[in-house]
Image (cartoon, rainbow, N blue to C red; front, side, top):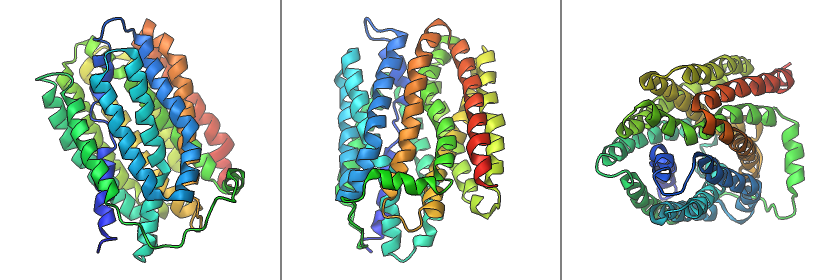
Length: 387
């Protein structure tokens, strides 16, 4: 029973992972004296660089030293990150906060699914990984949607209150992480296994092709979140509605994660990639062409909801289908996350200047760039992998 409690504890940890202050952070930062729009891209890019550099090392250490330890470190780093945003009043503090928050993401990304996999194996339910993770993702999105409603309401009192709400949740998450029960499964020691060997194994499967393709939509969506909320306020959107966007996005994510759990029944899953190629860039372009903040909000809800819901599913799908006997699940998923962070880093650095000229031109550029990148990966990776 104690081991089974890991499942609801992991639900709490996943619910605590999304930053409730995302919709107001850039807006709040731009109210500080002496800051500029390109600096938003700077502190965001520092976070992406940190996560990019630490993804594989932390995943490798997680497999070697223990997944619970990494989950504890993840929650502590996230807690320190939000403290920096609360007490900070300059770019330096926001860079430090972004750095610590990214450490939290890097140490959790592959470890979370790997720890769930170990727990289910110990419970003799290893075949339920995709279903269980999809259920956790669905519930966490719905719970976080409710929390975001609260966070949005708090902005009516003061713009920084969502940060304090996240502070409380992160403190709770640290306690929950310490209380996790170590699964009693045999984990092969990986200290003598180089990362290069893990990568060679991954190259023998469609893992890397799917990882790159799915990372494109998620990475572009994360980068967009750094600029879209200031853009909406410039179009006339009340700050309180920004939280509504994230709330409704979580509901869409829950629906997407639940529906995608049936993807294993599809013989040719690469066909679903065609939907991504046509849908996601089109939404970006439509957002860039509209000056109506209500329409932009609706489009953004679908961009956020679909990309995050798909991302929640893809990690468990990759582990279950392409790493069924792997002892290096955290390392392998860290490779996928590092791909995402690399794309984030490149896009954040390259798009910041364009965004400072015009948000609409910047979003349009992102849409075209996403379309080109997805086509290249589709024809040179996804489609070939299933021939």
